[in-house]
Length: 269
Length: 271
Image 1 (cartoon, rainbow over the protein chains, first blue to last red):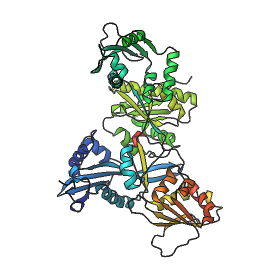
Image 2: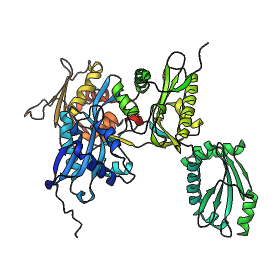
Image 3: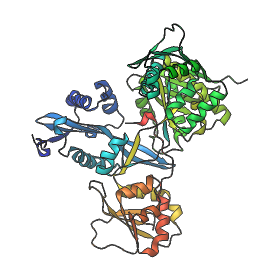
């Protein structure tokens, strides 16, 4: 093997959507998206039932009749300013079977789909991506530019299960610190965490692992009471988070008991 | 005495008022899809894993003043509040709708709740932060120009009033692809008289050279959509204007073509 792709772009045929391809298109997408993609019902809703959908919005590359790559476009009106709406194509759901990568399919797909979009009087092309894909593909290969949007995501944990997962992730990060390793050298540590609005739990830390327990037993080594808002702000790791914690400490919203015992244990350890 | 504002679930008769309210609420932003009844029904209610009970409508004694729609895994598709309400009332409405969304999310067994909103809306930002939400960066939204002729025509047409007193009455755009795969007109001519018109003169052997704007497609996108300044493009030789004496007029023209509306893309419009 010299690492060169054995497939050739010239051997592939292109076609647009027809209902008989649906199953294979979804299989391609499911195989290409690590985090999962969705099922056929979701595909049908997103594409085939979308207002204004045209079969040519789905570009399929086939080898001997079998789909090996696909790309989807959604032509929509985009509002740009008062009195200015333009036709824009949102592109995405690009999937290329592993053995057909490295033969120039993305550029071919871009050009093929552009012809159809120009016929549909599309003015702009847009899409969503993470920064890695944008910097690797969309910016250098297709000349797209990321827009400075005011769009922000606001997130809040609602369930005890999700809170415990976050606490465990945080504890796992802490366990790698030398100070905590010294503290846990002799025996595990039980930290009772009371996040306002949630049922209290014991975070049990040992050198090897950490876990959350909802059955509160015995006297904890450390007890921490913290409002959810302050705990959540810590994830930002910003100066504002430091202020938030400092403010909560001064106003008594954060309560820590057992610190002296922990220091004593550290000194002994 | 007016009835207090209440939250209820969606009814089919709400569709039109919700479409109107959403369009009014998103109007100050760029990057969203103007709602029609058909589009709203598709992007909200026809979506898998959503029912009418996930669409929460906020109503006072006279009209619908807000709504939100919850999708799977606690993703909030839209969170719309009447922009014409007074700040104090809008703040109270935001709190009421956030609380209702949280209750619905808990009922559906979601672990988290995620809103995608314009961070520039200070009132909503404060309401969500007060309710314990943390802010994270949203996904990248990127854009490319497919048809510069129509784009310049649309932008120029909209802002033509700003160009009436210009000394130069026609401009040539000499476009290069940069990282764009080729598929574009190479030369466009923007004429201000008798009314603004953009023509494709790529095939013309001769063309007027009294004012030529040389720019690549990526830089044109940066100038129009990304807030990149004319000076910075000139400094980096991404924009060249010949003859140099026409710079003042070109500045006015390019300045008029800039889209300076803040970009906000609601989750319901994601692809």
